[in-house]
Amino acid sequence: MKLICSQTELNTALQLVSRAVANRPTHPVLANVLLTADAGTGKLSLTGFDLNLGIQTSLSASIERSGAITLPCKLFGEIVSKLSSESPISLTFDEVKDQVKITSKNGSYEVRSMSADDFPELPIVENESFLKINAISFANSLKSTLFASSTDESKQILTGVNLSFNDNSIKSAATDGHRLAVVYLKDVISSNNNSNSNHNIEVTLPSRSLREVERFLSSCNSDTEISFFYDQGQVVFISSDQIVTTRTLDGTYPNYNQLIPDNFQYTLELNRKSFISALDRVSVLAEQHNNVLKISTNKKENVLNISAEAQDLGSGFESIPINFDADDIEIAFNSRYLLEGLKLIETDNILLKFNAPTTPAIFTPMDNDKQFVYLVMPVQIRS
Image (cartoon, rainbow, N blue to C red; front, side, top):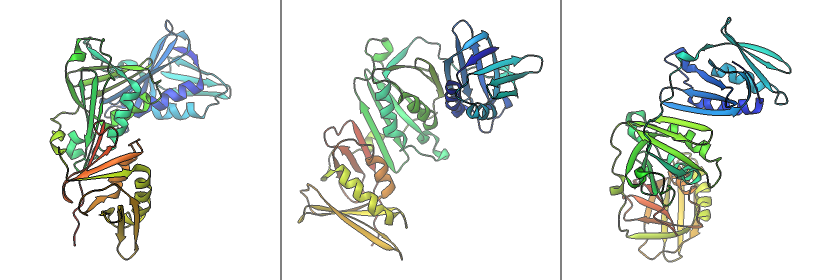
């Protein structure tokens, strides 16, 4: 293998695939990145794969001799990142020494390699059934749900996001047992790609993998489509020059639809920015103790009171105007849960709906309450 490529492009590619390289590899080669040079296409492909998450990307290169080799990802990445971006990089594999020589205008480095034959093959779904999904819409659905997934590995199925594909729509959901985020998007799947688009597909994918998918999708153009392949516990996302592959999570995802009430006794209309600003300020006190803040209505003055107390430290109190037509009520929430979800709603006004201080509360955009639903379990208030 012998080639010349851009330092900037190689560094960017290494940063991307390094996210799929194992920190504690079960085999030495899993700490490496696979480099594959193809003189016919003029492309250098880089792959990272920890046996669960795989990322592959490619860049243009002037390739004199094709070949494939693996290099220690961390060491190789640190060398490339510190080389000058004003000079191209030359990579030359020495078969006798089993090492790659990295040459730039300021000098050269030699890094011990491992055979590409030892690197596990990236799983490729072989069936011809796939979906074409709008990249930006899919990225937005992931961004709006990933935050609500669990970090508790003992509840493995909850550490992922549940994705449902039905005709031309996508429904994504994530919960950690304390809150639930659900996004429903229509007209984001091409209707003319194949017969599979008319069938229901439901998978739960690890949040770690989907964060990488969301990261590369967010940089796509608004009309870009990605291909989604699914078969026997494996999912592959393919764009023009990137591939992300991941295993599905085993188990049945909870029936979250039954958690969302059909009717509500209380409905509050709030200005989202005013509500978030007040929550942000009062939460400074809430964070000093147990993250709990109280929300209470004052029908007489048409305001919502937001308060928090930090024992032996102080208290905070603010009021914002609301539209409200019911008896006054008080309910308490974890301040962090509120802020994380509300900051993802983009409309000016939102609705807060609930039935009692101890039952699930629902936050939705006012103009489209079916597109995004954020459920938060209240905190029990002790007298």
